[in-house]
Image (cartoon, rainbow, N blue to C red; front, side, top):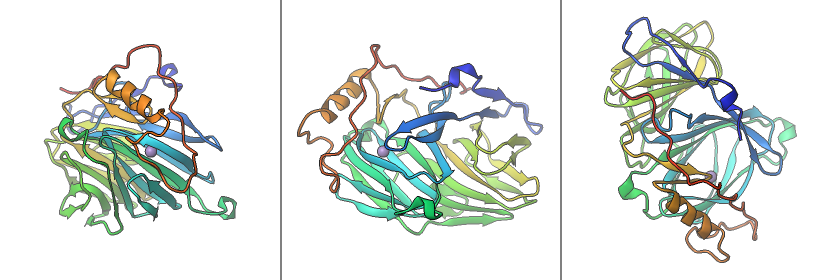
Length: 325
Ligand code: MN
């Protein structure tokens, strides 16, 4: 499934400012998503020893490339999906009746809860004409008491911006500085798309009770003394009240994720998030049942859907967080 095990997945860095502060660099894995054109993504989360950052439990970075996204109806449980396009536009349809386009700067937030199905298709009719698909697909694990909630969908077209010094941050989830996203989440969380200006050296505030991680998207970002190359995730642990962000002469885009350390060990398989093998196996069986009602129907696809893969011949077990004090 991946080439992860042929390479060490984590590099330990000591920051100059604080020898006790956690600063771990993670490399993404190159994962084929399958589908009509075999789109590939960089899977940033989960990592073998880093299953979650707050309730953030999954992060794929796709593109930039001239691939057409075509993800037919498929199910989700126990999570919220966050779709954050950086370029291009995506047509989202789901089993709670949503049928919308999402564009850069706009947020699609779908709550799977006990079960939802959706499709995501590039909205550009001819990608060879110059359109580029680039974006983030994130999942947020629901806490136990919300994992079986009714499915829901929200789209937010106007999101708040935090601006200070050379940093401009669009806050898609939670609170960052004085900017508060209207998106509905169920644990204390932050997700922000940062633009750090060339030659900027700016300190931004963090909640010390959150753990944080930062993904550099398109250049090397200096984060409190640690160089984070494009495509790498820097895990920062808890206990930080601020970060200093600077660049080496070119503006850099980065994504900041954080939240209260998630208390539960999660079993994640295919598109399902749960607490046990049996819960995941039941979700799979329900999706494979002819005429199922748990996940509903996504209009506009006839009978087309993505079938669930076979379960492995071993019981699914949770990943363990390896970097908490
Ligand atoms: Mn999905």
